[in-house]
Amino acid sequence: MRRVNSILVPVDFSRISANAFRYALRLADHLDASIDLLHVVPSSDGSLVSISLNSQLIGIGKDKLTDMFTREMTAVATKLEHVPAVRSFAKEGNLRSVIRQHVKEERNDLIVMGTHKENDDVDDIFGTNTSLLVSNAPCPVLAVPEGFTFQPLQSICYATDLSHVDAFHAGHLLKVLRVFRPRLDFVHVNTGKSGKTKFNMDLLRDVFDRPDTGVDTGFHILEDDDVAEELFEFAEKAKSDLVVMHRPRRGWLGRLFGKSNTREAVLEATIPLLILPQGEGEEPEVE
Image (cartoon, rainbow, N blue to C red):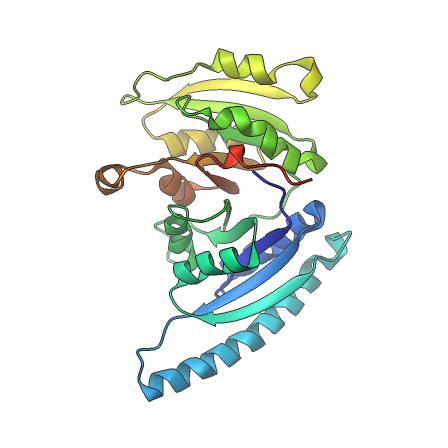
């Protein structure tokens, strides 16, 4: 994961997205990053009435973004050492497409979005869209559960399937978050359907559990058929401030018939969840 200089926060003005913005403000303060607030209005159907209505909605969205910025900045102002630079955007189009295009054009390094449990009766567009966005987001996505208040990232639960090399690049993430000097717990969940892994936890221990790393580490193998549930149960008991997962590379058959642990984890999340694209750890560092 590369250094976070710019954070994108899509909002729909619900309490869930407002909470995600407050979280992003606190995180950006620690990381010395800027924030882009983005509100997306669905595309018009091409009729004159629809075009006129969307133009009005864009204007209303801009006004609401200003109000939201003032309200949420006031709410966290006393907890900020440095006020992050914030830009506001109101755009029209498909939510996920607009987000991907904005990241490409503005070179955001991280997307922060609010989420809620799948069965919660909440009228917002981001709870479920967050889980969908992780499937093809162009950069890491940080899902913030409804009502979760920012805590310094002093303890990280890092999930690994022990079949890809991504966990061995956890040092890149630690470098990005070095201001927090976090503890790092590697966690692998064996399920009844788990096949043979390519690596074992001892190999990770050889890489990270050394005095010269200066990192407090733990290595854990758990047993449960529900990976997401077991992962968050562990994270809660360990008082983790962040759970990290890698989005796996999956072919079209896998996407069609398989169950995505990352999307399931977003809907199960009780602690902020960082989803890294596969191979994200191999990206070059930015000093």
